[in-house]
Structures are given as C-alpha cells and as structure tokens.
Image (tube, rainbow, N blue to C red):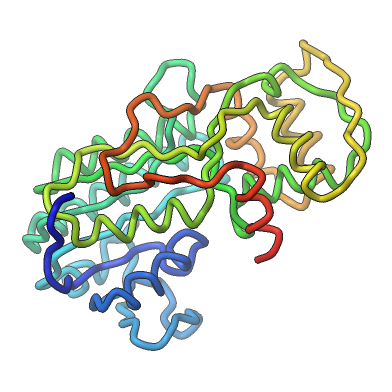
Length: 300
C-alpha cells in the first residue's frame, strides 16, 4: 500500500452539502487543517475546528485566500435544477474559476466527485455536464483525482430520498423502461471513506470508480428496499412508452423531491452505472452491499 503524506492543509468546497458535510469531520478527525469555502459563513453550521472562508466558485470570490498555502482541494460543487443550459454553464464557470485559482495557488492535488456515468453520448445532459467539469478541472490543475460514484445510498442523498419515497408511498407503480437499467449503488460511508483517504495518499490514481458490492436494476432496488423495511412488495406494472419526462412529473408528485432535482436524476437512470475498473488496493476494498447500505441510511 502507498505511504501516506503528513498532515495536510485542505480546502473543501461543498462543506454544507450532504457529501461534504459527511467528509468534513473525517478530515478533521484525521488531524488535517480544513478551510471550508462557504457563500454565507453566518448561516453555516460547521463542526469545531473547521475554518470558514467566505467565497463563491461561480463568482470566483474568496478562492485565492482559501487556497493560499493549501496542499489539497476538494471540489464537491454541482448545479441542480434550472434549465439545462443554465446548469451546464454554471458548472463550467465554477470549475474554471476554481481550477484557475488552484493553479495560481500552487495546490498540488485536486479531488473532484462526479458520477460513474456521463462520458457517453447516451447519458443525460446533467451527467454529461458533471463529466465535463472533470475535463475543465484537469486542463487547469496540476493533479486531478476524478472520483466517479454510482448512486449514493445515504440519508441525505437525493437519489436515496427518491427511492425511499417510491417504496413507502406507492403499493402499485407504473414502471418505465429505466427500471431495468443496471446500477451499482454505493454507501455514503464508502464514498466518504475513499474521499478522505485521498487527502494523504501518495501516488493517487487519476480516476477512482466507486460502486457497492451489488449490481442491481432499479426494480430490484425497489423490491429489496421494501424487504429491508418489512413492507409488502410493490406491484410493478411495466409501461415501456412511459418517457423520462413523464416519469419525472410522476416521481415529483409521489416523492418529497422537487421536480428540478427529480428531472436530472430520472434522465440519468437510463444510463448503466457499473464499475468497469475497480479502484486500487486501499480504496473501497470492502464496499457494503445494498441491503446493509439501506439499513445504515435508515438508521441515520
């Protein structure tokens, strides 16, 4: 296994989001100095020991101050909702601003969390945008580690909230074609553990693909989720012509997830998200299976 580097000075974007909020205490517990770039420091509730720097990647403000003397930068920023052109443009602008600031600040390593899919023509616009961000960063920063995760199973994951809402509120479901798409859902702890390990891992890979122990269709996930909760199995009625657009309105109506978030998630479900190249030894060696990941999320 690669040797680890000493205590790092880390810049974390997205610290008030779900993944960033889980990652921050891990980094602090490991003894790293962590500076969090937040748009509203007065409204941010961060753990003791975290440093806050007022900044905005879309405006490019505060980045030079945050990155000065840092060793590692985490880019956990994604645009959701709005029109396709809007979020793609915001993603590019934020990544370019951050990448340019990283280069000027001389930060050695940048870690970016994207999706397991997105590089193929068949992927949704949102997922292609997330993949494009990796290219924008790679063209600017000295070293990029591109972490690509399948659907994240965790209490604060929007994808998980959508899945839970469908299982808990619909005993009978009209099932579109995307329910047969294979995925490799990964537990939030496995994602966060991998991200944290990359802070001080020597010779980190350029790309890390993260998935759980099980490869399942969305249909299988619905049934197994119901079994974990001890619920009656949902009745799934196939309707092949049920388009992603119609599915989005239907899912937004049934689940607590708003339409602006549902649409890109549903469109992305048509793309298979399965690990093609396992990560190197020491990164996500023993991922949780789907049932255990659901139990952990429900307990949280």
